[in-house]
Amino acid sequence: MHLIHRGIVNKKYKENLLNSFKQSFKKGFGIETDIHATKDHKFVCYHDFTLTRIFKKKQSIKNLNYQEIKEISIKHNKPIPLFQDLLKISKNKFSLFIEIKPTFSKKLLRKLVKETSKYSKCVFISFKHQNIFNLLKLNKKTKVGLSFSPPTSVKSIIKKSKIKNIDFLILDKVYIKNKDIQNLEIKKYFYTIKKGSDFKKYNKKNNLIFENL
Image (tube, rainbow, N blue to C red):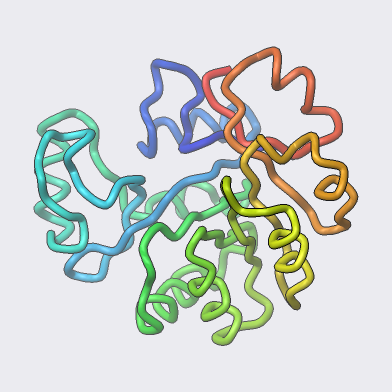
């Protein structure tokens, strides 16, 4: 099974927008996306910690209410969606790998678990592994994955893959050829595949997170 990275089906579809997610589902793929929490504790689908890269505004997501973010993003024709809206359009039919970008408080994690309780296709992933461990404390049946990037050692990845109740490893594509990684029985996803040649080379034996193909 493969996932589309941030809903970027092709250059026409921008990252983490509802129309991009809809197109991903239309093509039959699940998605990997990112979430942050706003000042008023709304979960939004957005990658960066600030509005700088996308909207040229040096403001942090965590310091803005959702209505402020909505108004700014709509003016730029790139409306930042609520996570709830993504859940609704997924109709519990497509896999959603949700990357928690910041470190969430236990209160926010409880809210997240509650909001997704009826959506069995959700998998929570994070490079900040404490998010995942805290989610499991709240509900050990929550589907979760640990994310890794270089320079994390293969030895460290293997060690953490053995932690109880971890369902997935989310790995930078630099690890895809490593035999020790490939031999792990845990399910793995490799990110981000951006070349058609790489997709063709690896898609038959690996789960990939890809874009623009």
